[in-house]
Image 1 (cartoon, rainbow, N blue to C red):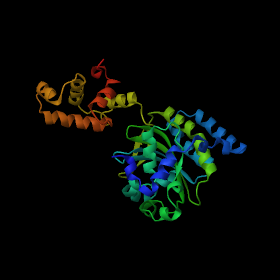
Image 2: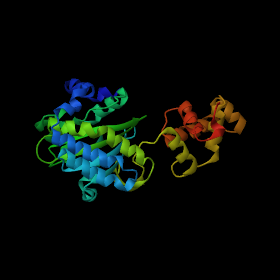
Image 3: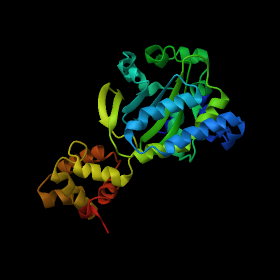
Image 4: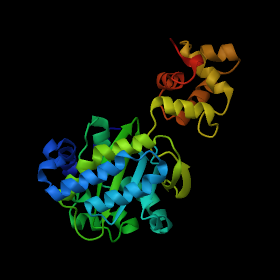
Length: 307
């Protein structure tokens, strides 16, 4: 389904304008010298970060930089709706409203714009605000506001990375008033360094909260992995990857160009059973089809390389 279809027609032009807004809204010319110094100080701190334990300090820093009351590092699977988050201040993790958020998370007004940015492959995506797409009255009348966002006047987010169906972003919130154009410019100026810092942290695991579709504490890597990282994880972590040798055996035959029926005859399985094994493999690997699965697994397992 085209993600733009999820955007109400009245708002579609606004969402597309947000995606395409010109580079000057990244705002360096809009910033005063004191603001530029603040950005430089923050990015200098980011350059030294290589450890996952620094994520809360990153979030505190970005909130301070843009004048936000809270900030969040999120990873969202747009296909499954699963969301994982590291929250600052950490006390927010104990809030009862998170359970209510899980039921309405897909209704966030910025989700369609983020999906369009991700699909368009925007190199330096601009920050987007709820106030860019909804009036105050519309926002306060929304199901999301009623369920979990009461007391938040505005949110702003910036995309840090996107791969396949998964996006990674930083979200900042204000309890009083809208984010200004200067605050947008501050977040935009720091975006590249934020993305680089999270990527350096890579696949180090850190305590986080799964906030949708259910709420539970998890220990996960927040960076979206490169293909080789995913493959290595799948091969060495039975809880995250392929639990049996059978599925790898089937993928090896797929890599040789065999059909489901041919694989079934060779292994003494029905074609339907082969297809079921493959479907489960795709879900575990987070890939859409057999070609992507073979390519992903082949990056770490020589048996599956097609040459």
